[in-house]
Length: 259
Image 1 (cartoon, helix red, strand yellow):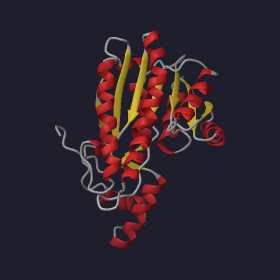
Image 2 (cartoon, helix red, strand yellow):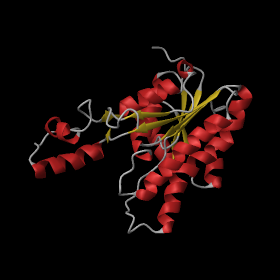
Image 3 (tube, helix red, strand yellow):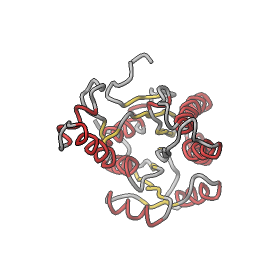
Image 4 (cartoon, one colour):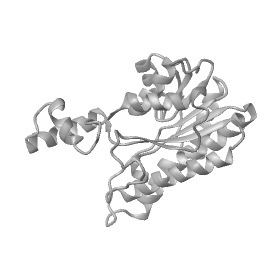
């Protein structure tokens, strides 16, 4: 399927590594001009080199000054049509051992970092009558774990903020959605489960261990980052014009369909 992203400019936050880098690469493959964000210009330049495409953009979206720096870098390339708020981080914690500062930090990293960029880029999208804002969440926003309550609370706030924004831009040509992955196959996830698999006697290779990791996932495996990137690319395209204000899970069917 041709996604018709040629001529579109896409900013992907946190694209200096991991899933963000894969999303940036996928958008570039579809013909979009990709702005590859890192916290430092060195991170962004290295990611552009790894991808083989893109323009390096640097700045800290957790501050107003950093957000302005990001926007200024974007303007050197052109007007942003697609904003992918991929940046967000987890941090360890429990209900018994999470101070208020950890909750504030989780909200700043996972909600306000994206809000700052939305507020700066949305007026131009609305003026142009076309835009895409895609926030990266987690299935934990509706099915949180007992651990990391501050992280899941922040992601829950991101989910509600996404729906609020979708209502606010109704009729403007801007589409807003949330992509919520479940467990994603990364090098870190594989290494952790391989170690666990050795201890539990599951095997020593990923092919042996993954079925145990995915025992409660109907598709029998965990999601690949490339699959998340494919979904984001589709939502960023004109092909997805009728999809708006949705929280779209990509978890292999791990959560009940109607929950």
